[in-house]
Picture 1 (cartoon, rainbow over the protein chains, first blue to last red):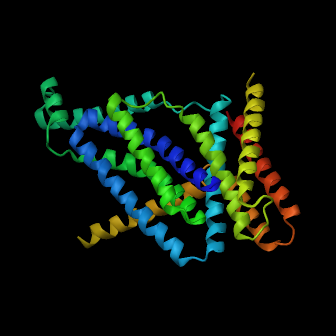
Picture 2: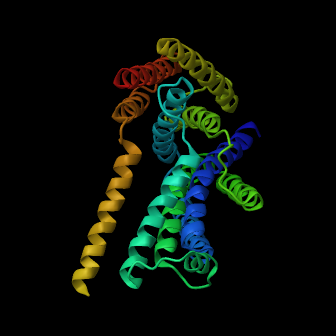
Picture 3: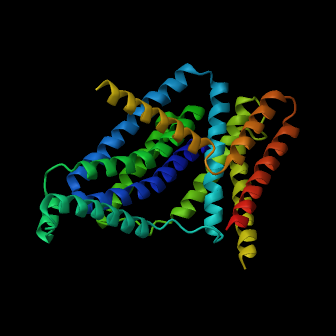
Length: 262
Length: 75
């Protein structure tokens, strides 16, 4: 029961973090290139990701022997978890700049507006009116740039979540649970962003990233051991002490690095 | 048409390889080496969990610290 809950929690938080980042790009594309293309691009990317998770996830479970799968998947989770944890500790201790959604949004808007300006100038001989911009944003016409930017944003941010859902789900044989956790996060973040009508810069992304890093690393080490038939003390419950150990060490590492900054 | 398709296929393959390179190695090759080492260790030495578990944990936490310390120096 504990490991099932942790699988859902890990995929939920990981998906929330990546969805916040994806939403910033979609929001910038929608504001500058029109909402229709941005929404269509996002939905298309989401469907491709669901297809990848469905095909790869189910075939992994059915085709690869469970022990080999657990070792491979555990190794992937360890690599992913440790790199998330490293980034989160460096950010918490002040050695790396925090992920700033507002800044990313402004950059993206500037970039997309610049392309739009250049295109309109070439077409209309430098006549860019505010009415024209407003028309484009609220028009029902498709904009290929808006579509591609939103598609790439959602697809690239979502690919990591897809990997997490596939690896967590297939190693624990709780594929549906892992996918449900991610789906809940996708719906929750989309609802929150739509209701607030802006990018979600207040979400404590770094803390969430640290939690996911700790969970993935602990799961990774646990599954590698399970695949190699190591007898973990406390069986499935050893995930809990692994999480406690990595949490404590992350806290200590952050404190030491903070002190080094002074 | 054939040339376009080949170029698209080439870009797709390169993108696929780049994704896996970034995912597995990227700017932290130490974690990749660590994971391969741990996998080899647990697969080859199955005998005593009393020895393997502490070794795996010390290796992971040690490499994580070295990676953090190195990143700190680079700042």
